[in-house]
Image (cartoon, rainbow, N blue to C red; front, side, top):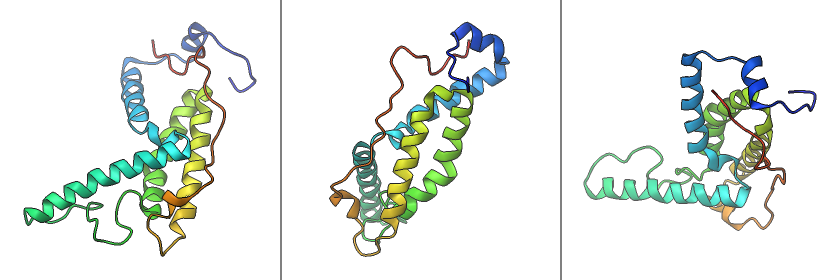
Length: 162
C-alpha cells in the first residue's frame, strides 16, 4: 500500500477483489507487460533489444524490396531515421503504448514502481536521441548509461490475481 506496509497475498485479494472478467484482463495485461519488458530494462540492454528489433524490421523491408512489395512502415533501412531505433519512433511508442500501460499496471501493483522509473529513464534517453538530427545511430555511441538500481526483490509478490 502507499504507507509502506507490506500486505500478504491474501490481504491484497481481500482488499481488492477481482471479478473473473477483470482477472482475465489482468492476465492479458501481464502478458503484454512481459512482452514489452525490454522498455524497462537498464538502458544499454534496452537499446540493444531495440537495435535487434530494428534489424528484424529492416530484414523484412529488404525482403519486401526484393519481392517488389511495398515496404512496410519502419522497415526501410534506406530511409533516414526510419526504423524502431529512431528516437522519434521510440518516443511515440512509449507515449502511446508503454507509459499508459505501465501506469495502469503500477496502479494495481505499486511494488513494480522500479519498472516505471526505468521506463522513464529510457524515454528520456530517446527524447535526447531524437534531438540528434545528423547521426541516426548516435545512441550506439553513448558512453554513459542511465540505470535505475532499484529492483523488485525476488521474495516480493508483484502479481497475484487469485
